[in-house]
Figure 1 (cartoon, rainbow over the protein chains, first blue to last red):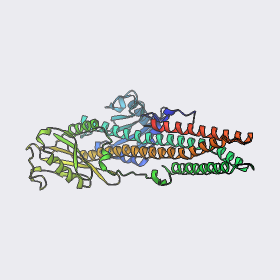
Figure 2: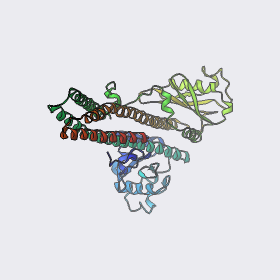
Figure 3: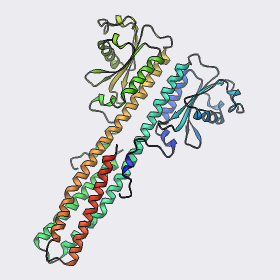
Length: 234
Length: 234
């Protein structure tokens, strides 16, 4: 217990060691559902979500004609989106310096992407929408709505992650606490037993020894109950 | 500790005793910001959010000409929205049976509202958007986006609430645990001290008594440290 930092639970904001831990907190189905919804609602033919673990991107979900779109394209676009403050827009994919050398289906020209950014400013992924032309319904308001959606979603991912991190940390502390309590309790219990084995004890001392043994028994029960609660907790 | 339910921390979904506790988890500023954004982005002149505590609605935020809109109107509309599965739409406020008797500014005719529903299906509030006519940009896609926004926001509110509830519950359990440990520990410490005061103890028994006293000392230190960690935790 002594080597534990008392402020271990004080971090109001918990930064994951691996940013991809964050995005793993949402179920695959939710990503797929959201990607499909975004494609339909914003009027884009192809949409995707990638996650960034600090080293590389990986594709989380895709809506559209996946077989026509190379991973090269998705990861190049994601990299551009990560560098953007709010969003990244390309009017003609085939003439953009970062994508012109990649094989792009002719039906994809217009691209807009929004980065997933945590409150602390860490990039944890990107959402990208592609279409042949600017969709009829697409305008500045749509982009702003997309940004609010991504913001709420990122916040949501962070909340889940922080909750899980904190619960894990507390479990560790509680486990260490109950473990550390057992050793001195065993010392007490053993010594009380050995003292009780002496022949020349007064009735009073023997009685006190028994009280000590009883007390260690109830402490062991308390610790067992507490450990069981921790084990059952989510 | 014994009267504690071991499954106290097992509820994967925590239902608040008072649903309004849920919605209080988001800062006022966030509601105001979101209400303003929704008004602008969906092209409505007046938007509002109300919260429902199971008994009555209260206004959380409003964007538009507040002085022209009566609370009667907002609460009547909220009640209609609560009863809706997904959304509630009124094309002409002045001819709707629930609002025709209320004084409504002539600039407000078209209304659309979406309920805040928790995963367990409890209604915790409503968001309402009003305008003179159907806004030019408003269509089924916009409504679907609004519903996704409200869903993400409700999820967000629930996550915050569950996190807080669980932390509060754990704190209570930990406090009870450390408190309950102190009593038997005092019994042990006192008895060891009284035994040690006997005159006719062998050196071995006296030594064991001292070991018991040392062990109670380190247990008390452990409990102090654990209690301090709990106190400092958010």
